View 1 (cartoon, rainbow, N blue to C red):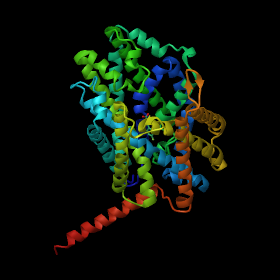
View 2 (cartoon, rainbow, N blue to C red):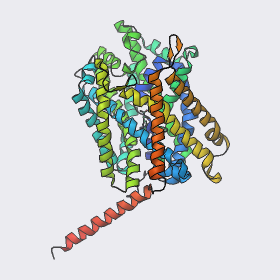
View 3 (spheres, rainbow, N blue to C red):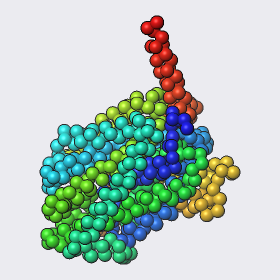
View 4 (cartoon, helix red, strand yellow):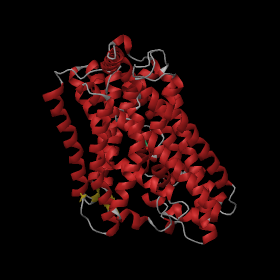
Amino acid sequence: MNQKRPGFGTRIGFELAAAGSAVGLGNLWGFPYKTSANGGAAYLFVYLACILLVGAVAMLAEFTLGRRSRANAVSAYKAVSPNLGWLGLLVVVIPALIMCYYLVLGGYTVKYALGSFVGNAGKYEAFAGNVGDVILHTAVFALPAALIVIAGVRNGIEKAAKLLLPTMLLILIVISCVSLLLGEGVQEGLAFYLKPDFSKLTGSGILSAMGQAFFSLSLGCGAMIAYGSYSGQTVDLARSTVVVCLLDGLLTFLSGLAIFPALFHYAAISGASLSSLGMGGAGLMFITLPMVFEGLGLAGQIIGLLFFTMTAIAALTSIISILEVVTQFIIQRHKVARTRAVGVVALVCLALSVPVGISLGMDVNGSKVFCLFGRNLLELLDGVTNTLLMPLGALGACLAVGWRLPKAERFSGFVGAMVRIVTPVLIVLILVFGAVDMAFPATAAGRAFSADGFGMLMTAAGVAALTAIAYFLWLKNRDTGSNQDEEAANLKREEAFRAGLQRGWQRPE
Ligand code: PFF
């Protein structure tokens, strides 16, 4: 097999890398707090249904787009129709936006893993407010991701996934077992997580579960197009889709199993009320869990170390895929070497993550510098990408594959109907309700217009519009490259290197 060809060497490598992209902070941080905010088990069921019905179909569509073109997302959409290429550019811009805040959160996980024995409890505000510390940890998190992507798809991403995903799964199983054996409170925690009470699930809860499923499966942001483009020609994409979705669903399920019994146990032994533990808030991971771990003594500290190490690994395998989407496009469009492309993308996104880190700290201190539309930059970017742009990207993939591929290549039967009609309709619902929820959020007195929410909506529309303009002005009629270009450049570089060596050998004569 040609070692220089950018692509996964094995099917299992491809599936583990895609699962590594999917499993991340969305599963370990987002899912538990959203589940606790939306009534527990009912949310879990809707979420798993979304993964299997809507998510799997969109993933298959993205894999298909990538593999048939063997190219970056822009070229992949252009290969369907030159007028659709702007969707490709959109799904390259979205991960760049996600990277700016995901890097900061990754930095937090590194800080918490390193601080497990020093004590993390009660330190959130001090850490978040210390800009230098946040930037340092963000950079520490970004470095291995950059090195892995520089090493290439087969030697970097695939090898890392083969090592890290099983490690993550193992740690999560160990933590779940320990959590289930804690005793007092565990039953209540399990009941909360596993006994559905659908009366507690609101429309916003269902929407949140759908959005969460998209984010968790890395859909609508080019990752699965990029990885699909590197998959072997003989890989059964439908099968791989099922494997990736099952792995993602399993790890999500386990993360709840690890967290809820421990949380309820801590509440039972400490007498703290669940609401005081911040169950339904984003602080669950960085504020509440360290308290829970440390409340359990030395064993808890060890569990804390394992938990945050696993979370950092999960975030790493996800950020790798985010970085690869943008890198692949830069390499192929600008015909530059991988190292240079990664260097530029990582440095720019690292620089952009600085204001995000500052804004989180400012939020903690009550100052609103670097806040926009009443939100810190993380909430802003997360809302714009997660609620609006990612569903848009996934919708584009389903419609392109369902309706615009040559007839012979289209899916037929059940999958065909899902790709063409059912999933797009569901995604449109997610989009419409998400937009309404943003501009007219629910308040105690009913829904009311929010200028801030509307501002976010306009930001998302602005990003999509600017991307489309940029595409039609600069990319539509230009070569945007393919995986073959990277292969050709690699071969050329190798030949030049060999020729250089030969000249070197000849010189002494
Ligand atoms: N799926 C990742 C998570 O659940 O944390 C997040 C993510 C990865 C989003 C890759 C987008 C992406 F391209």
